[in-house]
Each structure stands twice: as C-alpha cells, then as structure tokens.
Image (cartoon, rainbow, N blue to C red; front, side):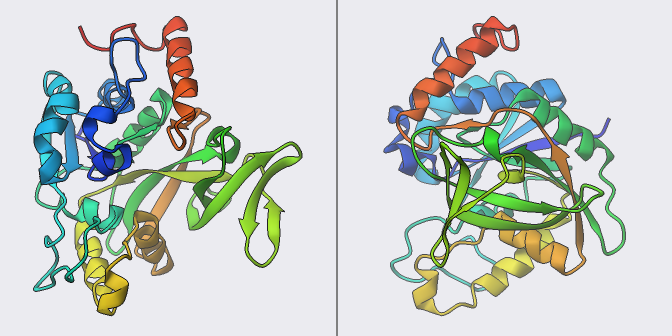
Length: 305
C-alpha cells in the first residue's frame, strides 16, 4: 500500500483555548481530542503525522501534544507564518491572525510527498471516517487535468451542539456521490420542530437532518499544492484593508477547483457522530462519549501505554 500522511491544522489552537495549558482532556488519562484522531489515523493505515502550528507555541505544543504522538509515529512540524507567502507577497502591517486553512495547508508544500488527509486539530471525527478516507487515498489517481480528491461527509444531525448554533459547510452532492458545491452556513441550530439555518432575508429556514455537511476532513494528493499557490496568490491581490482580516478557506479553494473542472471530489459518507468543543458546555458531552466508546471496546482505557 502506498504511504499516506495526515496533516493536522493546529496553528489556531492556542488562540482558541487561551493557551495550550488550558486545553482540557477528554480521555481518562489526560488524552485530548487530537490524540484520538492520531490513534484512529494510525489504525487506519496512516504512517506519518504533520502538525501545522505557530512557532510561538512550538515548545508548549510538543510538550502537551506532540511528545506522546512522537513515540507512536513519524512526526513533522510545519510552521504557519504570516509572511510565508507566494512570490514577493507580504502581510500588511497590522495583520495578526493566520491566513486560514488554505494557507495552512500550502505551508506544508515542502513536507508532503504522498496522498494525505487534512483535519482540524480539535474535532473528533470517528474511527470509520479515517478508514474511509484512507481507503480513498490508497486508490487516488490524478488524471491529466483532473485531480482525484475526497471529503468525508457527515449527516447534519450528527454535527450539532446542544448549547447553541454552529457553522457548517452544507454540501450539494451529485447522484454518483461527487461533490458539486459546499455552501457555508454560519448559524445552524436544532429546535423542537427541526434543524434550521438563519438567513438575514428570510429568517430561520428548515434544513434536512440527513443532508451532508463538511467538517473539514479532506483527502488530497500533492498535486493540490500548485493549485493552492495560484489561488493564494490571487487571494493576496485584494486591497490592503481587506487583507487585514480575510482568510483563505479550504472549501473555497476546493469549490473553485470543482467549478473550473480541475478536480473531482468524492464524498465519502459516514455515520460517525462528530464531537467538538464549540461551547464550554460541550466538553462534558465529549468526555461522556469517550467513556461510552471505551466501555464498548472501541478504544482502550489508556490510548498508549
């Protein structure tokens, strides 16, 4: 089987949690969500882990997260830096936050040389989702002018929070399972009478609970990187005021490639329950789910001895 890698985008993790020391464990022996993702990936056949982080959190990240993973797999660290940009481009004065997931992945261009999956650092995706994307990557076959990508698609009802609204990429999927488009919905919430999305012009509108959504779990080949570079260069041609805050998101890049006829993206359906800590109160639900999975024998009580 060909080698496959897992890219974990973690450059924003310190900012979201107020510092790495504030990341709360979800497993019984201090395991974090990211540790369960690595565990599932290794079982699915991934043989290399690539962490995308910021330089200022490197020491804390290695101590809090990386040290455990380094004992289990080959690990590479890539730094997402504001001025790591195509050509002669540079960040405008006053720009502080990272450039987004599209840029985070482009920063891996010299570290990735095999088909790879890309995930968020703080989302729990489920073991069978890693198996599905691994199966796709093992058979990925770019053709002349058409890139062979994949995306794990979750039922919307499996990705919600009990404690407020969430943002999700709602997918339009062709009958053959290929991705047509991903539309970002920034306010989706479950109500007593169903799941709804908020639109400024029409208010709350129903959404089908089984509609597929993207949770930023992608499968790519290294042929993505030249395409990413071109679109990142185009993105950076915005006026300087816009560049102070705007970000380049992976779904935007993928959508452009689909519309241009440059990529075929196979949606890989999963029935896994996604978990994440969108709200502070979500953590208890994640911890309870992990305890249930351990009781069911899906994970050992201690991930790694």
